[in-house]
Image (cartoon, rainbow, N blue to C red; front, side, top):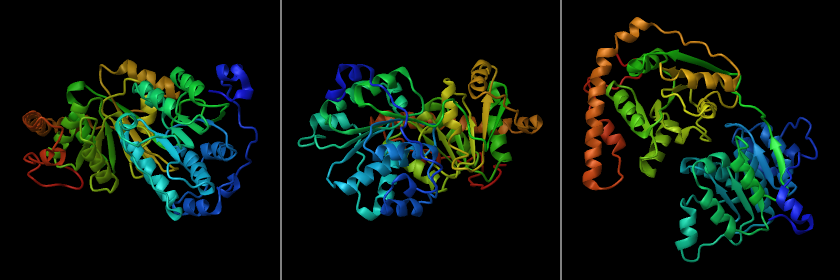
Length: 431
């Protein structure tokens, strides 16, 4: 798919160039070549200075080059591709201009919001249809033949979720004469293969060559017996009361169970996982963003890309199986120069996984200070809440089977019982 004058060799190798000209310490988006109306939009969003990936990518994109961008989560990648696309749209307005592929709908909605915020003064409209291949194959009159820009965001995760076939189908029906931006946290073999297939003589914009966490993130672990994980979680939520939390679980079932458990103990917790309907997932995310709920329990569907500014503490309730996912999870806090905490639960079964994480980030984590006797005082109340959570999970399963649908009743079922907490919602300690 390389340009004709480059010949077969360019198509085979798809050589990646480094940026030709380094931008010296830009003080504003205007220094990167961004037009005034978009600079004003950046200022209104509170984007005072460009991030590293924006410094590297925006000038190259404005020159009309394909880009492969490597940057960690929370690095400002959306702005790095959105601003050049909007600036090109100003020059050549048309109805269908750019396609952005993301691994989850939550991330798609977030990117949509940023495009509309940046383009609010120029009348930009976005849509997040989902199931794009299904529309291409079955929606009469729908096509992407006029497309000018293709963006693949979180490309490594798109491919890890086995969307390769769908991506191939999309590449076959969009114009070859286009600009392509591929952004990824990691350069995997699958991403390299996609780069060769989809990009023409791209410029590589990399701002991080190793896995690392931000300086203002305070990282801790606690080593605990597996059977007391719930009690230790409740203890930490009480000790750090007044903060907002994202708690990561390994499965949809454990995410739902833990949310029910915490609600029964009086905490304002809400789940987010792949077995919830899309409306319920967006509802959970919006309630947490609006601070109507202080605790968001999630699977790794929420570990990458989502920008929720007020997360104070990330808890790895279930340790991630893949060490790289740790970086993405804890990246939900300490964003944009703010401070934050992360606490990882390590049971007797998780020691090797935890050692891999420490090796990956190149540091030994300190233990979070705990009062063991206070934790043990919680076990009886927690055990009662566990029993109610199991009952509610069974009831939800029976309701789903009887309706033969996917309506989770998340908010409704999760608040059926507050017996353990006496029916009262408490803003600080649950007991």
